[in-house]
Amino acid sequence: MITFLKRYVFHNFGLKVLSLVLAAGLWFIISRDEQPAEVAVRAPIVFEHVPTDLEVSSESAPEALIRVRGPERVIRQLKSNEVQAQLDLSGAKPQERTFELTAQEVRHPRDVAVMQIIPSQLHLTFDTRLTREVEVRPRIVDADNLPNGEQVVKVDVDPARITITGPSRHVQRVDSATTDPIDVVGTQGTGFFNVNVYVSDPLVQVVDPTNVRVTVVVQKVGTATSH
Image (tube, rainbow, N blue to C red; front, side):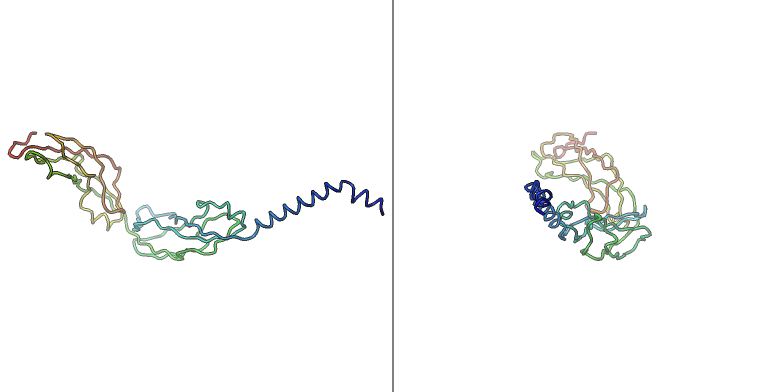
């Protein structure tokens, strides 16, 4: 018996004890990391398979607060872009519609589970897309502060019209596009300004946005306009 103990138990006893300690520590770390943990992730709602002639009439980008649960090790390493709600809009029509947001609509890592989605429903309004041209109106500022009786006598815009697109009802309400402010103080004779153009409605976009060239003629009152 003593020979057995010496040969199989006490031989390299220190190394065996060290191995046991290391194994116990490793088990403790793995066991702790496998404890469940939860985190709430604010994720975008991605629209998939949107019909080509349809627009979503929503001024803000919809997002959801998604609470997920999984091993603590996985939750600690979870990145925000790994959780995403996806909404299939194929078959949507120009009308209002409410969609249910469930775990089936959420893309997430395999080791985590979706516990809650806020909001659980998403109400959207759809409209057909409309594209048309509108007039460009230059925004002249400080024209009343010109010195020595000078005033703005002529304003030309090139191009005079631009193309806009967006939800039909929003596009129909836009009668013109506006340039960035043009400060004419200090302009003598003819001034040239390259400025951007915008539409105040956030759901209406300028197609192929480019700078417009605004020509401003400043003269004293009673002076003939030059051509």
